[in-house]
Image (cartoon, rainbow, N blue to C red):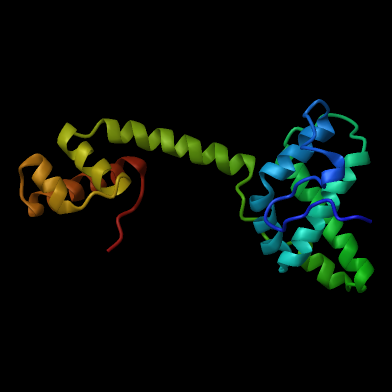
Length: 191
């Protein structure tokens, strides 16, 4: 089998096949997505499989399989589809290369995926919206100091200069803003 992906950094078609496929079909679109997100998929697969070589080989074979595959139905999450396909390709190769024990296969299948699921994304967005509403209720100067310090990473001295106040006053305003947000958000104060 000729190697289609030339560089381990980013997949590309061999010269005899011409340029990237035009995303006229779902499979061509998936191939293009695999090309575009190759680095991210390789990193996730490497973490999950414990080997960058296995991850790259699995992505290579996934790309090749997409060339002659048929997809029944709609792919709702193409990135997840590509990841799962490549992961299954890797597992099948690992089983073929050396017979994995049931415990090893089970261990690979139950490694926690660090990517958030749909519920975690939804909950995170809801919490961010709630926190934004709480921050909006702060007095203007406290809100500006909190955002400058905690979101933008501006130093306390620069904030003090910006508002014409002392660094100690910046600390006091920042502490009050954080305590207000924590209390309204329902976080318990820890010492």
